[in-house]
Length: 219
Image 1 (cartoon, rainbow, N blue to C red):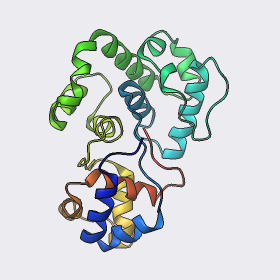
Image 2 (spheres, rainbow, N blue to C red):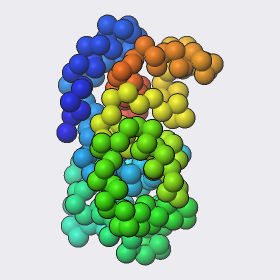
Image 3 (tube, rainbow, N blue to C red):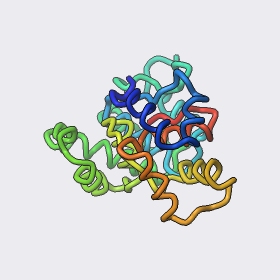
């Protein structure tokens, strides 16, 4: 599912930022994909913590295969969200999860996430009506979920248009490469670049990722 703001974002970003405009032009027809499944997105974000997009994709495929009745996976490795449920993860043995390439900590985080979903169903239903900061505060109260994971959920789970994950190494690497010939920039300058993209910083971030990795980022 493509974000509702995507076409508007592309037009606005091309006008405001020539560098980003060239990147957008290089990926015509490609869009961010929203899952529409909160648990799926958060579980995939935990899987991708502090590892490359390619490595995260590999681990996720193994995880989906381990908990999915059918051995067949779609080409993008996304799996079927209906089988990646809190109930299944909560009841999957840690040994099986570690066998998919997950660290011991990430196994604990996934179990904590699954239990939070099972114990707070009414609260979770209110997330779409909450502000970005309210959701970040709620999610970071769950063991193993930091601001980065919460921001990935805002971008890919709720389709929020103006998220700028400053701690994301891929975003920073993309900005350094395209705006400063690969050299680091002071944080203030990175923030200033992001301000050009408002209120569509989520789209700008996605294009930085897309220009960096052979596999489109998706959570």
